Image (cartoon, rainbow, N blue to C red; front, side):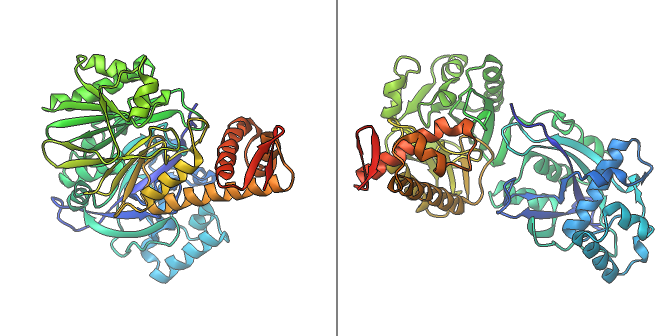
Length: 500
């Protein structure tokens, strides 16, 4: 089961006295170090604090709305130093800085700060424009209230170092164009806000914001982190903490590639098929269904989708994936390392196949050099960890595959088989390689100290892991031991592992 979302608020800050036909918003970039949407362009905001509900908000309709407004005002002040409250017009810039220091240092709580300085929040300063829920494929989920807020004339946003790395005033239309050129990354509610505001600050702007079901807490299924790359998470019987597998729909003006339609569940298969149909109705055809590897949570919906599309669409995979699937998912075309897959139409999308064994023998990744996009399958994931399970999984191959991906030029984003997109690709690859080598060294040390069985090795090496996960940890230890054996550092004898 996915985690229930936590309440949060976000502020779409507008600059006053600008052309309402070309309005400016304050767009921030989240720090790449953040686990949740690190490196994405977004609006300031954050999780509801228990003290937010203690703040009285004038003209609010109910306690839940008042708490969301209080959260929005506090987060805006903490992240940008902008204080939207009645009474702030008498405060100098220096006084606002002092107030922020009081809040951040903990010398004064948010409710106490407002009371002490006789400041008052008013709901009429915060225009509600939607409530979006993070999709269930994410480890951290939020039920986020979005508010349009005019920046006070005498205040200027200033990014407070921490969760944000930068921020700027930018017209909504220009920001959306940057996304279309793959220069920035954004999630659906941000893109929806930018497109809506770019059409002008007209009297019906709230209605336009609320015109789609996703703005009313309906889960987002079609997630386009980058133009022409739709991430469509489908529920699968995958390994926890993941609950979904990412199917990718890569498209241009004429063709569609479908990668890893993995769900065996009829309802999920129907929802994915409807998304593909939407793209087809716009004048495209499905070129191929491609598999990154053989695991059930990546191939469970292939036959259903092919049948839905009339049975004529080819399925393509590496030969080491095609062979074990021959009796269940027939593969029509074999993909080899270095093969190019080019979609006819505009924009020109060319994916280079990379045979990246380790997780499985036939694992494939796909790299688009033009945008620096890497589709990594289960070699790198945005949620959980990657299990290397012998005999199909081989640690030496896996590390070599990671190193091969690490030297790809100009990577900007990784689309993994599970979880959100990753925008710090080289740091993530370095982290994966370092983590595996650290585990390997710990395993070698445990063997040197006398641990012989998998259970004896797991106990000290995976002390930070729940005992419920020790069975899978034993498989990972075995993969490391087989590599260490090939390296000449350990050997197996008399039902135990020993150091050389």
